[in-house]
Image (cartoon, rainbow, N blue to C red):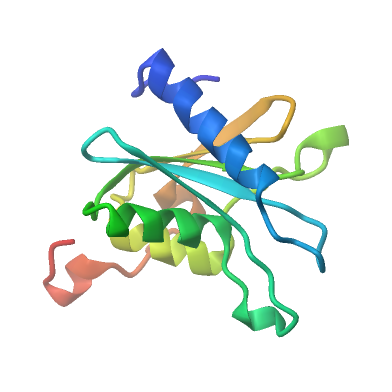
Length: 146
């Protein structure tokens, strides 16, 4: 894993937290469990998993769950995000945050927020938030500082 802005222990802690969260995901409909871990500005890691619902739009994504845990712990700034899904195997697409979660990450992360992808076997590509959400709308557009 090439997380150059993070220490080796932070890298491993993010990966471990996201993989542990993925194992707890509730995904009986899609059968696509996802785990996410967010490193906050205080160096703490907050994990989340996807939780599906029979009424599909009522589910919660792993990234949103991890951000909620971060806010509950008293932080509003994300320094790094790692997402673990079943993508990346057999040259298929890696799991990245959905459009809604990209917007949620924009609320708590700078445009250069690193977002890393992994699965249960290996790590994959990394992106910045601005690569995944170009010209994203954020608190700064409203004159607010998150």
